[in-house]
Amino acid sequence: MRHNYKIILLLSIIPIFFAGCEYELSGEFNRDVNKPADSHDGNISLSKDMDSIVIYEPTDIQYSVNSFGLDCNGIQLEYLNTKITNQYSSFGSFRITPDFNNTGWFDLTANFYLGTGSGSIADRFKAENYVGSKTWKVLFLDITKYDFQFQHHVNKDGFLELFWVKPSYFPPIISTINRTHTVHPYISKIVGDTTFFADSTYYGGNSKYYTLNLNDNNRNLYQKTIYPNYPFPELNITPFGLDSAMVSWTKSQFRVFYKVYLGNAWQRYIFTGYENSFKTICLLGLEQKFYLEIYPYVYKNSGNRYETISTTFKNGITANYKFHYSYAKDQFYILSPNNISQIEKVDLTTTEGNAYANNSINKLALWGNHQGTSFLSLYSDEIHLFDESLSEVRKLTKGYDKYGGQMTDAGCFGYYNIDSFYYIFNVGQNLTWQDFSFKPSVSDELLWGTIRFSLDGKYVFWRGDKYFIIYDVSNRLNANIVYQCPNSEVYFAIGNPLNYNEVIISKTDKIEVRSLPDFQLIKQINLIGKGNCTLINVDTYSNSILVLSQNNYHVINLASMKEVLRFGGNYNNHNNSSYSPRLYRNNFFINGTKTDLTPYLIKP
Image (cartoon, rainbow, N blue to C red):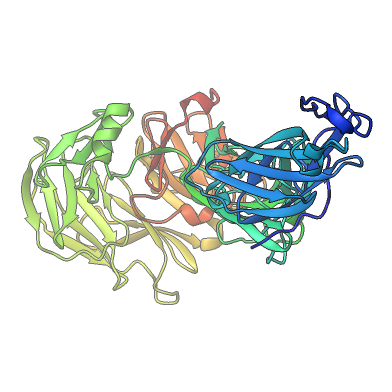
């Protein structure tokens, strides 16, 4: 497209002086002809007002000579292999068509001739002239291939800032970014040849792209798109103390606003603000999914645009296996990772032992007695028995519907079946009897309840919807009631594995130790305000009982009946699976995790 540049500009503010030509005066002309001056003022101007001219398309350039009263006898323009001549005219124009194969700067030179005005024949025939010249530097530039250094960075205000650099020899250019979008960044500043745009709505990732458009005379000269992709923060959970954690994330480079919530509790935020960490309760073994929302600063209250990242965390060392602990041998046992017909000893309290059990693919339920002489596992709908050699010795083909299950030191395995009967199997070496069952619920109550077997195999503790009952099942023929009371007096009961003549019960705000079978009170501890508590198990290593109230776990030393530890709990964590809470050797196992409580225990 042709451009006509109408603004006439001086080559230099200092006039050009033209040297006169040499000649002889003779004859009759001596008195009529003036000798030319040694020099004369003159200048030339182009419609490109710069010493360095950049040509990026076919361009018409106007020229004009100011002869200061003399005649312009001729003009000659030269560049590369091109010559342009124009006699007897002090103004005109010429077109330069760029050849982009010429990549460097070259000279454009204008030579022009002014008559001397002496009146001589040479002057009249335009052979006597003042001669002047001027040179400009010219560059052919393929603007579609030029790098305007369209880039981005984070400015001191924490916003994404985009910028491009215009060479000083370029004409004025109008620049826009995302000009067709509803929301697009505007020019924030111009420093020298660099134009900056700030976008306060960008908050990381590839959430936005930016297209730079350069325009001259309503014509698009250049367009380029970039995709900033600054990484979003990484969310980390670091436990500290026993049931707390630090939730933190790498701080964004941008000025953003953060919100955090747990699980599916969207808009029930546990944190909002500009900082990148906070402390929160993080219960042992409870899998929690944290969601971090990242908002651009301008949208912090509107919620129009944000990014969500999440991570799942379970407080405690991973302990994804099932095991049995023998008090008499102070030993943990697991099914062999290599052979389900074999049991192995593993010290689960060590890093190596814990890792070994975690990597096992044989994670089937395992029970054993406290003496470490008899074990039982369930697979293939069968009950498999192991002896002290840790090898399988026999199996029972009777079905098992997996409601609870307890192994005793008397060679018994008892469980509550879906038909509301309690079954007791002989899993010992004395095969004088095979099995025995009875219905623990009485006629005027519902069938469902909770039931535990004493570890000496003598008593069964039943709590139905109306009664708490202690059954004597020691003869393996029938179940005889030796104690009965309303269920309001007893919420939960388990036998004391360290003293078979004792039963531990919970009732409203109390834990009591009572004698068997007469049920006389021996000692107690008050847990004011804790209501009815679930008795989980006795850690025979430390003679402590693990208790779960509605909101806390309690570790109570049975010798002193003093609470030696209390920490956050969740009632929903308690069930009858092997992943429910258990305490062995002061290690708290729950939901596939393990935590050593030793550093937190108070001396009883």
